[in-house]
Length: 182
Image 1 (spheres, one colour):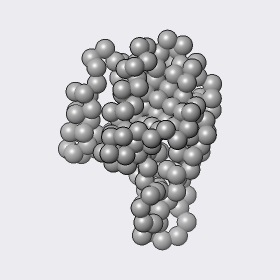
Image 2: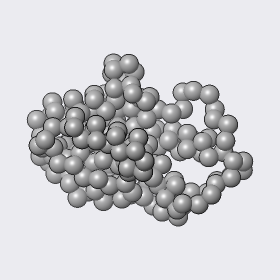
Image 3: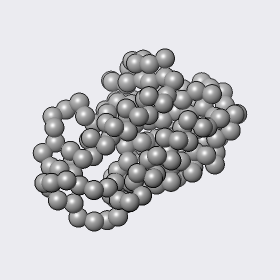
């Protein structure tokens, strides 16, 4: 069993590289998609990803209960591919449809800590190979608004925790993977 994190910036090639790793495994692939089609642009992105995936892959759409989805589909003969953790994080942070101030401390929804902890726990327990895709959003300037800074901070914390739990970690830039761990 191996756990792999593949992360990078927008359009860096991280998803393509993760899919390549899944194909190379020779195992049955369960693709857990975390995105929600909230607007036309996101619908188009989701449709493109669907077209690019092999037809024999099983696709599971799960935007919040990621630990449950992984637990349900993880077997020794399966590779679980999750795309993507930062979309899932965004779903969690903004799941309660409330207004957030542009200045001051922000408090996550009640479910955030529980879902995050369950995900990190299941990552330790699974018996399948797992490939996780995430965005690197903290390499630029510090965002101006409190909500944006909060998201960048939580994404950085999540990536650190996942990288610590993974056997291998790759940073992808311009379609080129750089092994950071393993």
